[in-house]
Image 1: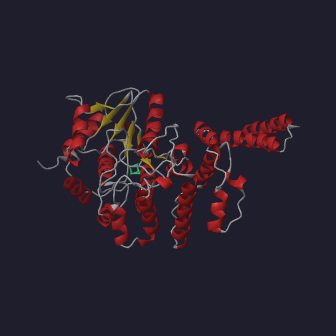
Image 2: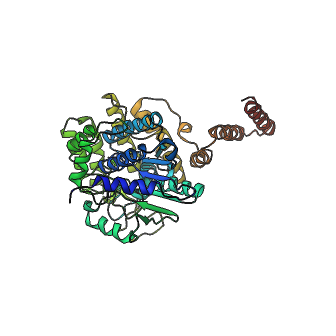
Image 3: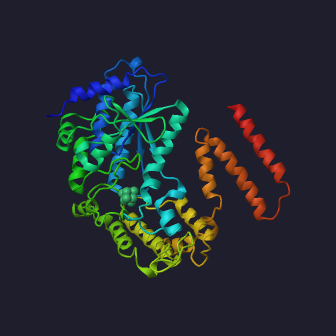
Length: 438
Ligand code: SF4
């Protein structure tokens, strides 16, 4: 039976107009891939047909960046998100874009280079939860705690894989559009679950994007990457990473990253250094001389391999920064690792009693800079991340608390607490005065 868009649209409309109070927000998991694009288009077009006063349910388009995304996909997705933001405002839609990223201590490089976690594989796939599930879950939980319940819209489809089809059926409540999510007070709505892959493409070819992106670009991206989808991952039942998909460029769970290979073959040869790093991570993952003989939990014994040795952690960082330098020299501004992650790696090395290698030395060697070890050593880095999250609604409070901490730390470093109390009070008074003047 061919795709019945009118039926899907009706389902979406009925659900949108459900008389729940307060209106449970819709959270659309958006990866930028074909399925979530089709889903969002359908939702957008349906809601836009309503008069403005009836667009009374908020819709959050949540897009997660693992910080190790395939650069081509990341660039494309970010452009689409910007189109969505602009079009939503100009068309008076209740649609808001939310970008999520992993927590600093859960980032890929802080775990792999900092803590020495071996590159993920099927037996030890530590990445999906940290990089994909947790950041989105944190946002959903936030919304639930604010409003009580939330509805998550997913572009999952039954024909994608038989295990996914089973998982969808297992959670389905007979006769109802919504199924339960494993998070309490969260429900899942998957309006395109019966749509076939070729029907998704047919739809995207025929129906222009209501936010003004070009679906042909998306198609070209799939063609050039010879790729399937890497859908947004909301929970463990959603397979994030098949054999041929857009995933993290560092992904070592697949034997070969076919999409990256195809992109390189199709002219994106500046990505070669990335593929080389990925291949090294795959090749040497289980080399005994790359790994400690004791696990982080203390277990030892024959065949047991612990974290990467300090020397190898330092080596991987060097490879990464060299690759960064090479791709920047080629005119590409993709960032492989950010400053906060570098600081967090240094702090983690100190916590692991690694003093022989320092992030600043490795960085200086490659970029010819003159960083001192203190520039990459902020022992409050993880705490500050938590602080930043807590102050998300009042960024100026983060600035203030940060300054007070700096003030205290500088006095402590100088072994001179004299006047600290007065200094703190003075700074607080300045802040209050400025707030009053606003
Ligand atoms: S794409 Fe690979 S590296 Fe990324 S989360 Fe999935 S399994 Fe992990």
